[in-house]
Image (cartoon, rainbow, N blue to C red; front, side):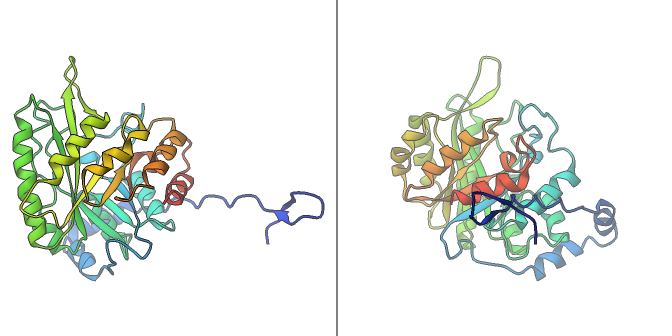
Length: 316
C-alpha cells in the first residue's frame, strides 16, 4: 500500500495521484518485418478483431483522431513536425486507446494497419478516414478527392464507420467537386449500412492564400444544413461539428439538424482548459453524442496524455 499524507487531523489518508502509465514501446523493426514479409497479416488481424457496437450502453462516443498526417498536417501548436515520428504517434495512440471510456480511433489506412498489427483495436470503434486529397496549403485543397478508405475497404476490413471532410468555399469551384463526391460516398456507405461522419465547414481564403474555416454561428448553421441534405439517404449520416467562436451559440446551431453529432477538437494550442469548457457546454445539447479529438489530447501542452484523455472522457 502506498504511503499517504493526512489531509486533516483524524481524517483519512489522502493519497497522491497515481503516476501516469508509461508509453507502450512500439517495436518498429517488428512492424516493418511483418509488412515486408507477411503483408497479409493486416487482413488477418482485421478478420480476428473483436468488435463492438458503434454506440455503447452509455450512448456516448469518445474517439481519438489521428488522420492529420495524410494531409501533410503534422503541426501541433508551434511544433511543426510534432506528428512526424510514427513510433511516437503510435505509442501515444496506444496509451490513449487503453484509457477507460475511450471508444475508438479515427485514422488513415497506414495508421490503422499499424494499430491492427499491434492488437490495439480489439473491442474498439474504428473509423476510416476517406478523403485526404485536399493537402494542407495546396492550391487544390478544396477539390478534396477521396484518396483514403473507400466504402468497400471499410466493409472488407470490418471497420465500423467512415469519416469525411467537407469544406465549402463559394468562390472555389473545387468545393463543387467535393460536394458531389461527398454525396456519392454517403450513398455508398448507406447502401452498406455503414455510418459516415461528415465534418462540414464554410471556408474562405485569406488575402495571403491561407484557407480558414468560418466558425461564426451563421456559417456553422449553413454548413450543417448543407451537409445534412447530401445523398439519397441520411439514415447513416452523422455530423462532426466544431464549437462556434461564441460557445453560447451552440444551442441554436445544433437546432439545424436532427442528425446525431459529435464535437471535433482541433488544435487548441496552449489553452487546454478553455477547450474543455467549450466542449463541456456543447455536450449537454440533445443531438451531441460525443467527442472526436486528436492533437490536443495526444500532444497536450504539458505532455501528460493520460490526464488530457481522462479529462476529456470525464466531460461525457
